Amino acid sequence: MKINNKQLKNLPVITESNQELGNLESFNIDTDSQSILEYNIKPTNIVKELIQGDLTISRGQIIDIGPDKIIIKDSFSKQESFQKLKEALKQKKLVVLNKE
Image 1 (cartoon, rainbow, N blue to C red):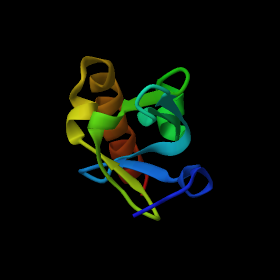
Image 2 (image 1 turned 180 degrees about the vertical axis):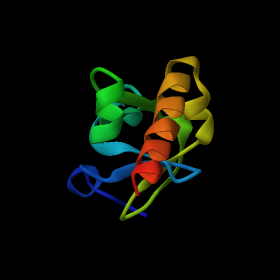
Image 3 (image 1 turned 30 degrees about the vertical axis):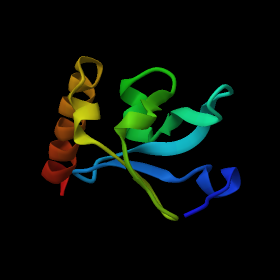
Image 4 (image 1 turned 180 degrees about the horizontal axis):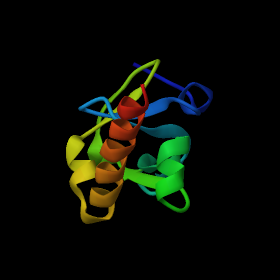
């Protein structure tokens, strides 16, 4: 499948376990190989509260890119820098459930 930059921009980025991280903002290209190396993700509001700046996903972490979303490996969220994020997202979910 061929997809252009306009179609990629703003695609939702989710993990295998359906945890929304944000939307694709941009990507970085290796000019030697003419390949995308990394994807820069603008975090969703909940994620944005927990981290500073954008998330960067390497191409090896991508499972699938479709017309409506990008799916990344759950192992991405197991990296040390995202353990706190994952726990905080779980707690946010519990808070929301408790409010209902």
